[in-house]
Image 1 (cartoon, rainbow, N blue to C red):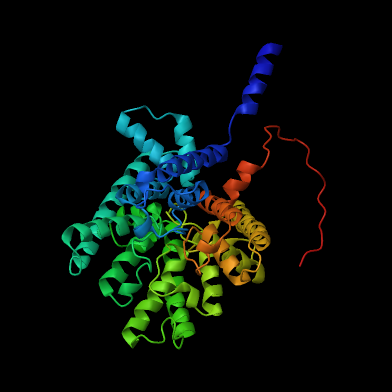
Image 2: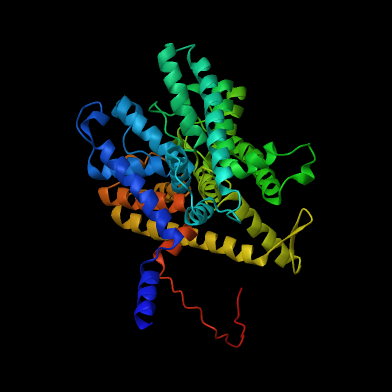
Length: 454
């Protein structure tokens, strides 16, 4: 009996928390990607990337960030670019979704353990229907990316050969929908700053990826147009996404209107296209149609706020998530108005979710501060605003850079790599993975005593 008890206790010690499995899963994908990108055949000069650079690029692809220490189009061969695309696609789906896809293809049985891990990965409330959700995610991804690739290929065929335009369409469609931000041009999409087709297609792709698969399937599953049938999550996500995007477009337009290095020299129509693109892109993908390093400090600070908020839960984007941000605002309003409950759209939100939202935001700020602080040590003499912009961009897995990524020291590149991984997994999940977990639940409940706050 004693032997059995010790064996059971030993099993519990080595049993991994779901956060550990997600961390190891993403780390495994990054390791494989790093090895593939170090192969000489992956680079055009046939000289393999250094370990740190390959690790950075692989992490950026798997974490669908888009930050790069080398130019994608001129550095990587077709093989290297395809490796990046595969890493982007698998990273956009997430480790567990990609794993379940392999189970389905191989005809393997998917047990309760895999379903529980998938629930943790997708951040759903229950394991019921998670396999069906994965199938929908795969189908939605393929359909949207195909439509996007066709639209982009037709547009680019006007100035490129058909073969090149098709490849450009496929690459940018996958990169955009997965909110990766990798492009094949050195200046991203700046050549097409006023092009309606490029602007609309790319933004629609990364916004669809950014609102999340739950929202897409919820909208698709409606039998009629009655908005009250939508879930509370969908309503909040759509409302705040629309609100933030509209407000951001006007703010960027106003801040950059007279900036000759960005919007100042453009005609009025192109100004609006550029303001719209840069207004919606910071919360999700890392494309740009103007030089980010030339934006006013006010615009960069505002973009940092958008990158911190990020996309929606269950999406290919990062950040603390727009629903987390919305819930914190709702909680603040309830405190200000002295209301006991947090009610939205005639629904009451549990306080346990408020605590979780607060934990996500606080842990995100802590991780950003730690990496930012360390970067100020390793990147001596660098502009503080550029360091902070790079850190927040990595956390939000956005990929926008103020022209500082290539200047990072080897240690700095490792720190930003860690930040990208934290942003993709999620700050709270990473905190769970780092923390020491105990299975012993104390039955002691101490007396309550208040402290002074505020």
